[in-house]
Image (cartoon, rainbow, N blue to C red):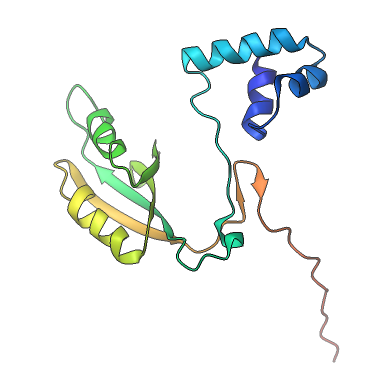
Length: 161
């Protein structure tokens, strides 16, 4: 029944009837399966993907990706520090990564200063954090399979000599 999850991941507003129609299942069967997924935590939440740039709000905040380098702790690895970071309301997502940095932290704040204060006061102050690198998100083109702004066809320009 992972097909139900795949459809909901792409469009959480789909009804059980719409999913049943697409998959050739009964609406009751789909509704019961969705209910089981919600009870056991497989479906953690149903969310809307918002293109905040289209709201016209001048004060819609800033998004930042903060890479965090940590020294893993004996017996718990990265988990204890990750759990501590995840508790902050500013943190929208947190992932263990491979590469130069260990954790990728996505946050939303009112302005760049709040981001820098969050890094200084909260992340850098955690025992075991050995470094951070902050990247401000300038523009989102696509998120969770949703393209925000369709790219316009660009004219090919040639240089004629």
